[in-house]
Structures are given as structure tokens and as C-alpha cells.
Amino acid sequence: MTRKLMNNLSVDCVVFGFDGEQLNVLLVERTLISPETQEVIFSDLTLTGYHIYEDEDLDSAAARIVKDLTGLENIVLEQFYSFGALDRLLHPNDQAWLEQFGDVFSNRVVTVGYYSLLPSTNVKIILKGRNVSWYKVSEVKGLAYDHDHVLQKALEHLRYKFWHEPIGFELLPMKFTLSQMQKLYEAVLGTQFDKRNFRKKVSQMNYVVALNERQTGVAHKPAQLFMFSRDVYEKTRKERFDFFV
Amino acid sequence: MTRKLMNNLSVDCVVFGFDGEQLNVLLVERTLISPETQEVIFSDLTLTGYHIYEDEDLDSAAARIVKDLTGLENIVLEQFYSFGALDRLLHPNDQAWLEQFGDVFSNRVVTVGYYSLLPSTNVKIILKGRNVSWYKVSEVKGLAYDHDHVLQKALEHLRYKFWHEPIGFELLPMKFTLSQMQKLYEAVLGTQFDKRNFRKKVSQMNYVVALNERQTGVAHKPAQLFMFSRDVYEKTRKERFDFFV
DNA sequence: ACAAAAGTGTTCGATATACACCCATGA
DNA sequence: TCATGGGTGTATATCGAACACTTTTGT
Image (cartoon, rainbow over all chains, first blue to last red; front, top):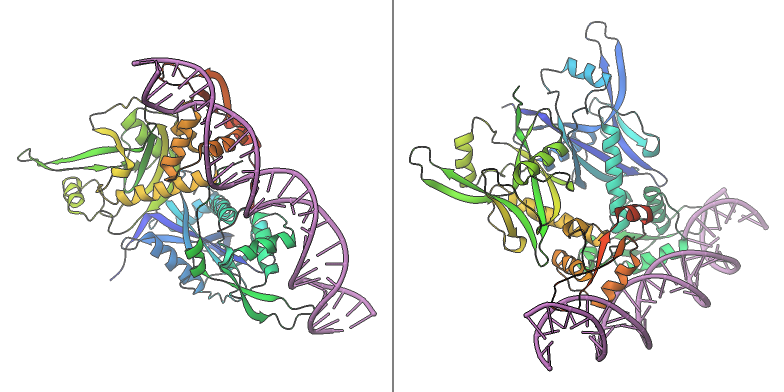
């Protein structure tokens, strides 16, 4: 049985990673090769994404895409926005690409954006014949389609959520130090925090729990390790009246 | 020239209104009439929504839908989520409906959700042959398709934004009293606020500006009128470090 | 012994919360 | 004159911001 793709609907996943210093994003190399001459016509980068099947819901499509490209399952995936501008596929590269695959896909594609969060170290990416790798978010530009825009929107959503609730823990290793956590917040939000004040705040988050364990093999005082407890988080979270400036 | 609809893509608009007491939502009556007997087979309610045209972007589709059903233009419309579950159209009513219009629309429709905010008083709704009217959000259930779910998600987004930034002003008349504003916040967020503390907060929002004008014709001390200045708001807003509990 | 990051407290100003009475108007 | 909602201030507790030095480890 062959499944049918919807030719005008796709899902794009913005897979974010954090390597301890920088926020990264997973991109795929797209290379168009002339069928006659075997020459490379162009090569650029896209977010991970693909059309969805007719018998597949949006969340599953997003999970499938990430799994196909990276081998990863059960990761955080959150839908953030959908994109349907009429000019999303009008760049010459995109048109050339569509020309070669024009019978499969429509000219008018609406895409649903998801983002996902991974620690970019410790992740084995399985390359299924495609070139997938991490790029620094701050250096990414000139992506295929409207993917610069999609990435921008994903970043905005990520930042918005970072400001208002503690969601970054999937970007950290399971056991992390407070300095790593602080660096993550600084990298995503583009700010600096005072170490003592940051730690004072964290010490009030009872869902960030201290382990009886420290770093090893570092050339300085080894840091205490912590982990995030979603359990405690769900149980203690409250809404706050906070509609200001 | 006839425009072509995309048979598997729609936009649904959750139009919220506030009447001074309650949060309301605009719903459309959907009545299926048997082509043979002219009998009413069923009648239920849907959000305002429709399929999009091939040459129309998502935002325009949302604006068109709201305009067609209400006659309103230039209102706030914000995309909040897209829905693509496989079982969104499986209710017997929906199936019967699709049976009558099955050649036009697909069984698999992904819909992009928008919400919009209006004061529900002072709005002239133009009924273009369809029955459109306001319903209390708290009493709505049993909508067609997955619209209960869509409405729920829209409400969540609305509440989330209300907690974190001042966005409700489109739901108030242009000139409003602080009690109206407080009632709005209480209605949307489902909380009670202390009058003095609420007003203390508002007095710190320099984008809520007092007018030299008071209510008239009320059987009590007439209240000071205020208005929202988006201008001042955009100029004075700052991000805050606020990632807690 | 030195380099490198970990870890720790206090003061000050701003903000959140709790709480009760008089005022202006129309009927 | 009465009913209705408008309008106001203070005290206490909590939170945010600014700020510098000692500790522990590997090399």
C-alpha cells in the first residue's frame, strides 16, 4: 500500500540545539543536480520538513520528519505557526527545484511550523543519505523557501516562552550545572544575568532539583549537578497576574 | 474569472466579543436541509470559517471570512494554531454535511485558526443570508467539526496573552472605564481582582490614558473615561525576566 | 602556585497584597 | 433619601537589582 502525500501541505521542523555556548539549528543541504549533465545547479540549506500524508495528523508528520532525518524519537515538538504566503516558493532556486519535482508538489504549499529542543551535544544524528547538521542560529541566513522567516518566527516563540515559563530544560543535558543553565538563558534571550541573582531565582524553582553529584575532571572547583523535574513543575506551577510594560 | 478553492485547507476565525459582563463568541448556524423533502435534517453551530482560495494568503483568508460574515474590516486577527487531526470531520452531522457537498471539499481538511477581538456591543453584524450571532463562551458546547477544541485552544491563547501582556483593549469600547477594564480581565481570566490594587497597576500603565470626560446618564457617580494608546504602548514596552512558577 | 570557574549575603528600592470608607449621581 | 457603582491610602511582606570575595580543583 502506498500512502498519498498532500501536495499542498507540509510540515517544517525547526530543531534547536544548545552546545553549551550557542543556540544551534538543524539544517539540511538541498542540492539540485542537472539530470542531463550531472552538474550541481545549486546547493543551499533548508529546515527539516516535508509534505504530509493524507492519513497522518500534523503532530505525527512532525515526529516522522524529525525521526527520518535524525533518528530521534520522543522529543519535544511544539507547533508554533503556519505559513501560507503566496510568494513562499518564488526564489529562483525554489522554482528550479519545483520544476524538477513539479508533478509531485503544488506551487501553493502551506506549511505548519514546529520547533523542537535537543541538547546538541550527545545527539547522534543519523544521516539517511542526506546532509543534516548543526548550524549556529546567529549565523544562519539565506535559507531556501521562506525558511529564514520560519526560523525567525520559531525563535520569537522560543524567546517568548523562555521569558514567561521555564521550558529550556530539554536543551540541556539531563544533569546540568547552574552555569550551563544560565548560559542557555543568556544565549536564547540575548541578555546577561547576574550570577548570584540568577541562582537565587533558580533556588526558588523547586522543580530544579540538586543531585548528590558533582562534575568530574574539570580544572576548577567542580560544580553541583541539577536536574529538571517535570513532575514537580506541573504540580507547583501557578498562573500569575503579570500584564505589564 | 472564477477563483479556485483549496479543498483541503480552511481558515477558522474565533471572533471574541465582550459585552461588559461576559466573553462572547460569534457562531454561525449550520442547517442541513434534505434536498428531496426540504426537511431540516439537523441544525448546529460552527465557528466562522471557510476554505481558502488558491491565490489568497492565510491572513487575507481570515480577513475575508470575518468581513463576509460580519461586514467588519480592519479588525485584529491573530493566527494561533492549526488543526489537522484525522478525526476532525467524523461526527455524523459533519459526515452528512460533507455528503451533500462532497464533490467540493475533501474529507481531510487542515484548518488554520485565527482569533479576533471586538467589543460585542456597538457592532453591527451584517447577516449575509446566514445566521450569525453572539453566544456566551461559558455556555458554548457541542459545536460542529472539532470547533469545541478550536475554541478551547483560542481561549487558552487569549488567556495566556492576557496574563503576559496588555492586549485586551480591542474588546473594550474606545472609551472605557476602569471598572469595565477590570471586568474584562476578570471575565477572560476567571479571577477576581482587588479594585484598589487593580487601579494601582493600571495607573502605572502609561498607555492607558485618562480622558477629560466622564460617563453620563448613569445612576451613580459617573466614572472617568480612559483610552488605550497603542503608540505609547509600543514605545514604552520592555521585556522582563520572568520565567517562574 | 596559578588559572579557572564555583559558590555565597546584604542592602535598598520597588512591587504585591490586604483591607474599609466616603462620594456623586439618577431615580 | 436611597441604591448604585466610583474613587481613594497605608502598612507589611516579598521580590528584584547591584555588588566582591573565598573555595576547590587540575595542571
